[in-house]
Length: 521
Length: 51
Image (cartoon, rainbow over all chains, first blue to last red; front, side):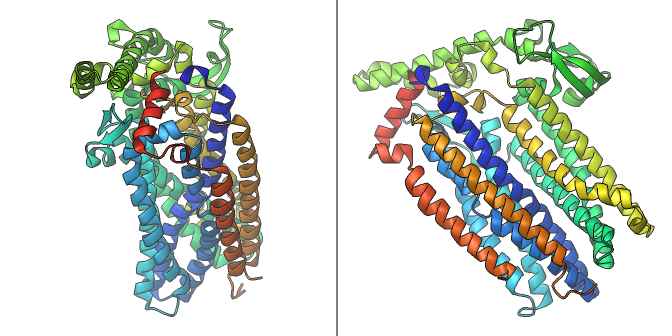
């Protein structure tokens, strides 16, 4: 019963999913990026025959192993939650999620773990080239397995390539390639994996800087910075490019998210991009906690229009346009969308009742509507709006979306600057004297995780209230279970994952302090 | 204990906690445990989506 859903159940279920997703993501980006850094280091070893490169590779491989071992299977918890806490959602999307998640499981399990074992235990047992091939396959496998889960996530942000079956209440995949090569999916995968490359590069630069501050493992540290900073610069450029691509898509497929991350309430032509801003209570609507104005902002004129549509005078819709509609710009009001969504739900209800009453004529007539492209484009497209009672529910948390987005972008540019600087210092051989920069690089490891988490906050909080964009709001996706049980498991997971995170940090820092196994200075 | 052994212990404990304790006691599949057939599951979700 959607109308009687306990909001505390929804909030605890959301909180639990956010908690497990954030903790899972603590481990993933380092695996994605460090695997490729290992590839480059080992390739240098195989090509040059220099044993120092082997020693460097093995040191970072140990840290990779710690992260992998502690992080492995933390993602499976989210699948448990789908079945228990989010059963309506799981059923609704089942056929779309099934294929990518099955491929992800097979790929992660077979490709990654098989070659991971060879990578760790195969030194001196197989030839150098075969070992290097295994390291390459671990890196490719890890990043390909990330593809499938990100394809599933992208479908939730932009559902395409499916047909809703009103008899089963499930979305059925019509075209696998449309789902896989959805522009949102491709950009999301590129942006997410390359952001992992940046995080891993910051990690390697940061840990290496610690060695330099301590005046230990000088050659290992310098060579590691050389590889990681180079990889970091290339990855950062790619992250900026793919982030720009993602933003251009968001403005089309999730315009409310775009307005929220930019803090744009009133749409305008030639909209300026707020580079830095501080939000305050709006004078316009002081009663609404979610409507904030800027107390301070530095704006780049017309740049938001350019970023969104490729020309400086384009109209960019704001939150108010998307709620109230804008006839001139062809934007439907939320009230109109809610009407259409309610009609689509009514048709589904009539179909269900006709089926139960064996009324073949009404049943066939209603079913035909779901197969009609006109009904799909004009009514079923807004199915989720049929659950919404107040248009205010359609506005995500604007300050959270705005700050998370700007923090992520700002830190992304900072990391690019840091990589360039560290690379110059290493190439000029002055890095050991740059104590302040070395210390900043160490602290940047925490900033890299903050940026990465902010990215997911933008993606997931910015799209609220939707769990499947425009088709299913989050509150309609939860199972009717006891909120108390969700609270219990929330705290259990909080305890388990916090223990794992502490174990990761303690084992990792101990291993870093020990340095490479042979103890050579 | 070497780091390798420590990691194996963590992996095994973690898998036990996740798959035996958490999955078994706290995360039954809502629709699978309540209904025997897919038709019943569909009906239940349709009811949720249309009321």
